[in-house]
Amino acid sequence: AQSVTQPDIHITVSEGASLELRCNYSYGATPYLFWYVQSPGQGLQLLLKYFSGDTLVQGIKGFEAEFKRSQSSFNLRKPSVHWSDAAEYFCAVAPRDNFNKFYFGSGTKLNVKP
Amino acid sequence: EAGVVQSPRYKIIEKKQPVAFWCNPISGHNTLYWYRQNLGQGPELLIRYENEEAVDDSQLPKDRFSAERLKGVDSTLKIQPAELGDSAVYLCASSLSAQETQYFGPGTRLLVL
Image (cartoon, rainbow over all chains, first blue to last red; front, side, top):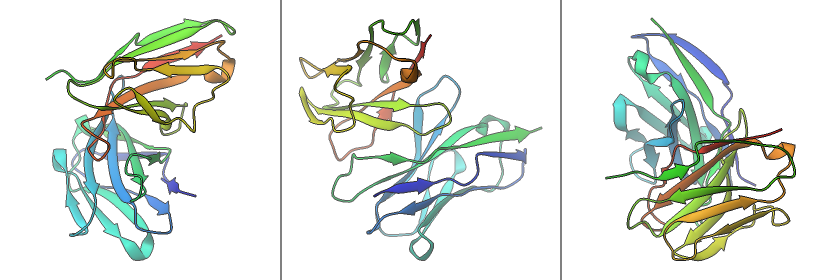
């Protein structure tokens, strides 16, 4: 069965510092991989996705993620965090034979210190 | 372009009462999804529509939950009767087709007392 693990429930970083949010998945074959962000009172917004090809994926708002097959990971990074990045971040996977069967992780809540 | 619209945004009801949520997807989007997001968890798919056909409702608790998308555009999700454990955020999403990116609405936060 599919599973997505986001081991960090809460993370606090200082504004301007770098950020890495972890995501590990469990699945027989490499699934499609996604990162979404959810701000309070807002719907989930797609940051980036990985289907195939280059394992370093660029997204919106200066985010990037790297797919590492050997580690079954898809970690999200940003070199310099802004206060407006405070939100909850969700990693999601979808099997290649059922693109829309999303499995979400439990989320990581990011706080940004001024 | 308007995003996915959901109403109401908040709903408080007593247990055993019925409740309904409405979703209007992005114009032209054929695929519509309903998710439930429990506190501290990621969303879980309840049902997916391709136009007016429910193509994946395996996670929908059919004893109390029902959904419809009669004209293949907007959709309604109903719970009858509601239980305490139904308290959650109910999210609607849509995509152009089953192979396209999903766009989410702001959700309806349900509290069952």
